[in-house]
Length: 115
Image 1: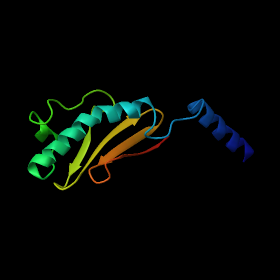
Image 2: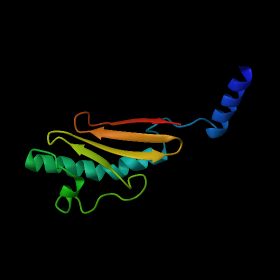
Image 3: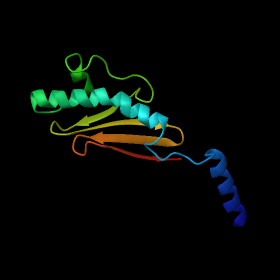
Image 4: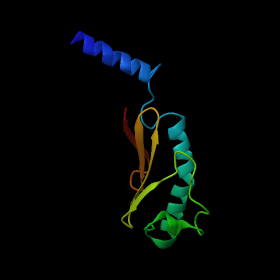
């Protein structure tokens, strides 16, 4: 049993030298937040004008945003809408796989992930 614990301990130390950043922290997460900000602003402007959120992010182009982000980690934004609310998300890797979601109701990022 001690041998298995030692091996697992060594795995985590070598996989995350100096410790791993929590999901939603670090350069990749911050870049995702920054790249998503214009999309969030466009969604809120759309809602202000039409009193509902669009069915797709493509509905924002060109009146509310010129293009959607295509730089990592926002190569593929997730988006779902009920019309009255929405969830915007992105996934990035390193360390582990992380998913961050912004909701129109909470107006804050919530991230989770695993190694």
